[in-house]
Image 1 (cartoon, rainbow, N blue to C red):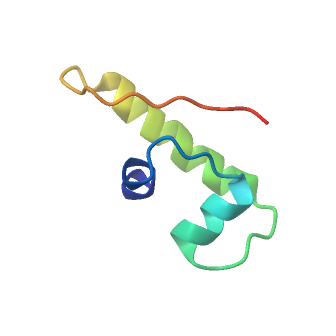
Image 2 (cartoon, rainbow, N blue to C red):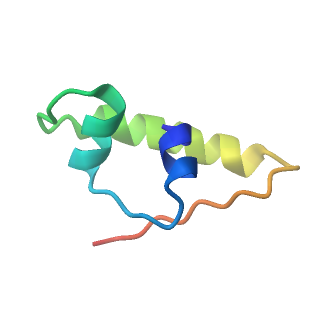
Length: 60
């Protein structure tokens, strides 16, 4: 997931598209899996004191 985000900076994805890119299978509406991974990634980025990367969530 991190590789997908970092290699496509400035690009927004729908949850459906993100799921298909990462797990390479059709999205069947299981948001919990994706939300959990995104939350953990955000926490790791936030806790990285030396990190210069920022992650902005766009709604819509």
